[in-house]
Amino acid sequence: MTVKCSKCNNPAIIRIGYANLNLCKEHFIEYFESRFERIIEKYKMLEGSKKVAVAVSGGKDSTTLLHLMNKIKDKYGIELIGITIDLGINKHESKYSAKSVEYAIKNYELLGVKYKIVKVSEDYGFTIDDAAKKLRRPVCSTCGLTKRYILNKVAAELGADTLATAHNLNDTAQFVFHGYFSGDVENLARLRAIAPAEKGFIKKIKPLFLVPEKEIATYAIVKNIPFITDSCPYVALRLGSRSQTILRRKIEEIEDELPGFMAYLVENFENKIRPALEKEYGIKEEEKEGHRCKICGMPTPPGRDICSFCAIRLKLTSAINTI
Ligand code: FES
Ligand code: ZN
Ligand code: ZN
Image 1 (tube, helix red, strand yellow):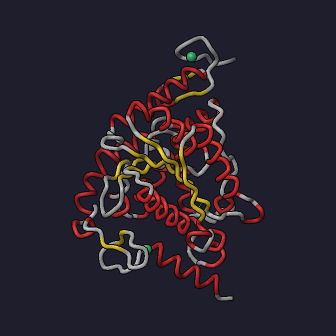
Image 2 (cartoon, helix red, strand yellow):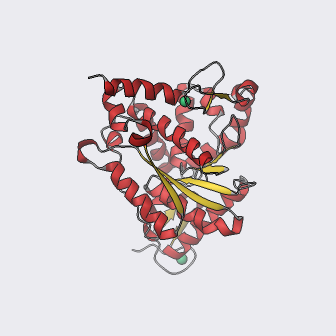
Image 3 (cartoon, protein in one colour):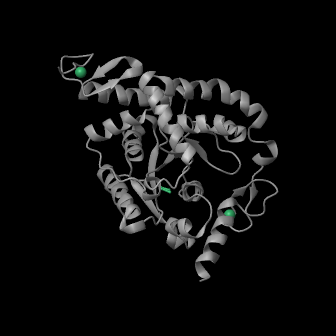
């Protein structure tokens, strides 16, 4: 039997468990877009923003974020610019990075959004494939560090005052859970949906932090947004963190049994737990002053001459050049 939409007589295409709704295509699009705006409003994400850089990897989350931001840009009086990083992940002929960049560009052109592609191999002399081969640390963590560094740097160079990234509810729930599991109170205190401009960095926002991955994927499909469906080969090979992978799966299983679990976990964390942690473990006054890396000039914690990215880059480029 086909399930009917809770708002009209058309067949439902998705069940929103936590809201006890079954929605048809039109009503889902309406629900999804207005919920996105409500989150932007509730957390005052665009207050004071004029130029927003959107990090677009070519996957469903970031391409959807680009479309949603483009939809509201005039209402909020903001200018958009896209940033895409070519990480050089082409392991086993996967051409993962090449394809991701292609999808990102398709979306920029479709929407007429200006963009910048940063090629890590050209600008920094290594690829994430090199990092996987030459470094003894998990490749996903080198990749994450590289992405954060480049996005912060390039967004500021492009004159943006805000950087928007597409972390979704499942990602955020996973980070919160992992923080509890590992007792990483400092990272938890800094896990914010909006990070104001500080320590020499521009403001950062995560407009999808309360939006479940399933809804984003459904929206991207029904709106015919072009996105890459391949997964990163390193994630597929389980070279990422095993505990992160297991925690994510378990959180999603709980959500199936207890709809709304992820949103409660993340909203309670953001509104109640994190502010308490911030008092004890948040950014310290001395960090706010913004020490600079001696090599690249980007902000680095006090007491450190070079930033973590430059340290990794030096190690990696010297490993590449010694045979
Ligand atoms: Fe960074 Fe896969 S996208 S390691
Ligand atoms: Zn309907
Ligand atoms: Zn540096």
